Every structure is written in structure tokens, then in C-alpha cells.
Amino acid sequence: MSSSGTAPSDHGHTGPSDHTGPSAHSHGGEGPGDPCAGPARGLWSVDEHLDDILAAVAPLEPIELQLPDAQGCVLVEDVTVPVALPPFDNSSMDGYAVRVADVAGASEEFPAVLTVIGDVAAGAGGLPEVGPGQAARIMTGAPLPPGAEAVVPVEWTDGGTGEGAAGTMRPASAAPEGAAGEVRVHRPAEARAHVRARGSDVRAGELALAAGTVLGPPQIGLLAAIGRGTVRVRPRPRVVVISTGSELTQPGEPLTEGRIYDSNSFALAAAARDAGAIAYRVGAVADDAESLRAAIEDQLIRADLLVTTGGVSVGAYDVVKEALTADGEVDFRKLAMQPGKPQGFGMIGPDHTPLLALPGNPVSSYVSFELFVRPAIRALMGLADRPDTQRPRVRAVLKADRALSSPAGRRQFLRGTYDAESGTVTPVGGSGSHLIAALAHADALLVVPEEATGVEPGTELEVVLLG
Ligand code: AMP
Ligand code: MG
Image (cartoon, rainbow, N blue to C red; front, side):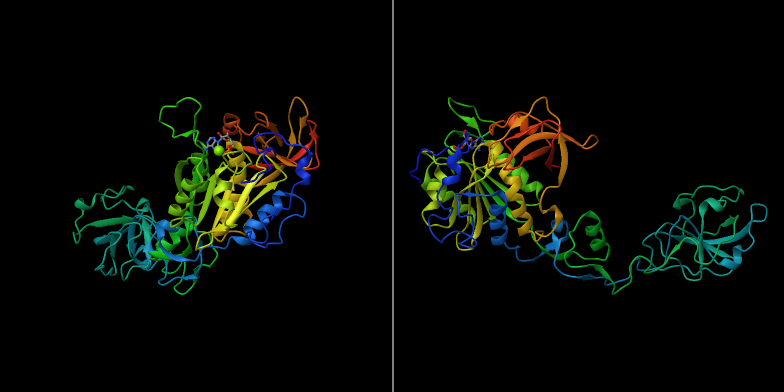
């Protein structure tokens, strides 16, 4: 544990002593990433901390996944089309498969009268041959039978009722396969009319999806359509969220004196899932370094990324710092940021699993997640270069009754609501990092730059949209 003892934590406001702190790598060269990384001064900027994380976190090794499990993942192979799509000529309408010459010149007044030789349903095999003067009743998606050259929609016929008026298809039972019947066709048809040609969607051998494609629902659909049951992708990262604090009670249990409910592990597990990860939530671990080390040890086996909350300040029970400082794998540093000043980052265990130790205050941990954990998850997924690695950012005009004050030298993230129509952002709640209710009513973070000590209403600010 740090012995400086008096330095303020994320709980409260800090003074200019922020700027005179020790080197961020005071434990010497053992930290993650480049041991020479980080600022010469005590505080890391938000960007330096993020860069340090992204430099150390590599995309997960690709694996073969069942199609439904690959949603949201990045494809790592070029997928070519094994068989043409559609695989055979088929009808785009319910109607009659006919020969063009038989319906030439047909009209309401002088319909072409054809013998119906049977039904062709979607999925049918053993197709009837359509000869001169004949038609086969055909359903959407059914293969075009040999001999037929076009499909006449049922609306352009009497529907086989023999009454001369356009009718609807009769139930199959009314016209059993092979049953003799007649259909009157009221219009001519061009060759291939209402026929979807084999390969008209994609041809065999064509590139269906290139490596690097993110598999959304339409891409999953295409892979299924060309018969792929599994695909090679970078898997969703398994993110383990561990909250710490002896004061924490699990929701649903009675609250005894001096205790509060654990909200961080729920919020961050939800945020991890939202970012594309498979999230495992570990209920609060007490402020005891041995218990925490054991919990982390247990979780390492299933984690691609570990996130802890709480215990990173310089208080007497700052368990994460205490448990993880000793072997030097995790670097605890202070950021020029509010909320979220104390942060830890390192690669731990035999597999060098990234661990981000976030501060305990609920707003601090959530803002830290958005700024650092979300990009780390996206990097593990192989999405580091994409624009959606970060939340979208826009410029918006501050709408407020009075000026906001902001700590000098710290990038401040205030909660607010963004109105796209007016291009304004309105703060919700204050700057306190315990204000969970205000966070729940916000949809944006207002970014007040390091150099600003106040922001007048009407000022344009950067805004992070929380989606
Ligand atoms: P710490 O950094 O552990 O001292 O926590 C800072 C503040 O956040 C304290 O008021 C804690 O009670 C609170 N806190 C820590 N962890 C959680 C949690 N999982 N859920 C809700 N509040 C928390
Ligand atoms: Mg704590």
C-alpha cells in the first residue's frame, strides 16, 4: 500500500498537489507496455492511459464458432460461396409455370387455356415436365419445372377455377398432384418472367464476405444461406467484473447498518455485454488482499480481461492496490481526469491477462469503463481500428442556467442529456461521482478540457454519446 496516506482519492476534490506527484512508474520498469511510457510528471493524461492499454492489449486468437455464437465478431477468413445462390431457377410468385408460346397474345377476352399437370411446391423434387399446352401450378421459391420458361402470377389467371375471373390459389387438397384441371391465363409472359435465376444472388466461387467483416444479422444470414454452419472469427472476450468492498451487499438481500448495495459489478457487467463481451459478474469481494488475490486467481482461468472496482485509492482499506502492487504486474497511476483519477492497469498471470482496476465510486467506475474498458474489449475483438472502438463524439452547445466550474488540469466528464435537434447538451446532476441516479438519466458525457476552469452557457463542448 501507498504510505502517502493523505493524498485525496477519487472521492473528493484534489488540489494542485496533483501535479507534483511521483513518476507513474515509481515501482520501476515492471509496468505494462513500455516501462518508459507515461508522463514524466505524476499525472497521466486520459489519452496516455488509453494508449498504454491499447498498446498492450492484442486481439484474441481466432476460433471456429457456431454461426449464432459469431454474431458481432470479426471474421478472420475470406468466405467464398460454395454453391450458387439461389441454387436453382425458381419462381418469385405463386402462379403457373408455362411455356411462352402457349400464352402469347393471351388476354381477358381470349385467355390461353392450359392443362394443369400438377403442383410444384417449394422444396419439391421429382418435377413434372411441362409440355406444350400444359402448365404446372407453382409456389414461390419452388424450382421451375423442365419445359417451363416463365411463371404467370396467379393474379393474371382464373386461379384454375374455370370461372374466368382472377382467383386465389386453391388449397393443395383441391387440386391433388397430377389431377387434371385447367387454368385460364389472361396475359402473355416473357421468357424468364417471375423466375429467379440460379446464381442471380451470388455465384459459386464468388467472395461472400471478406476477412475483417463484422458479423451483424445480415452477414449471419448470408453465411447461413450459403450453408456455413461455423465460421472462423475472433471470439467475444470473456470479461470478469469483480467489485471490492466490505460494505457491499448484493441486491435482493437486506441492507444492514453502514452497508450499501453493490451496483458497480452490475453496471459494468452490463456495460461489458453491451460492448460485445461475454460478461461474468463476481459479487463483491471483501477488503482483504488474500481473498481478492484468491478470487482473481480463480477467475483468471476464464477471463480474457479482468475488471475490478474500488480499492485503488490511498485509503486504509484499498485492497486492490494492496493485493496487486507487490509483484509489480499492475501499475497504479493517477490520471488528469475527473471522475476517475486513480486507475490501475497491468497484464497478470501466466497468460498476461489484462486487468483494469477502476475506482469504486459508481460514476467513476462507469466513466472509466466507457473511456478505457470498452476500447480494450473492442481491441480484444480485433476492432481497435474501427470508429466504433470509442463511443461517438459530437460537438454541442452547453445549455445551463449558470456556468459550470471545472478543476484545472483535469479533463472532466460530466453527465448530461444531448439533444440532437438543437445541438445542445444539458448537465444532469452535479459532478459528484456517487450520483448514480443522475447517471441513469443521462445519455451523454460532457467533456470539459483540462485547461478550462469554467464553462459558460452557450459554450461549445465535446460530448460523448453513450448510446
Ligand atoms: P473505494 O474506492 O473502494 O474506496 O470506493 C469509493 C466509493 O465507492 C465508496 O463510497 C464505496 O462505498 C463506493 N463503492 C465501491 N464499490 C462499489 C460498488 N461495487 N457499488 C457501489 N458503490 C461502491
Ligand atoms: Mg472500497
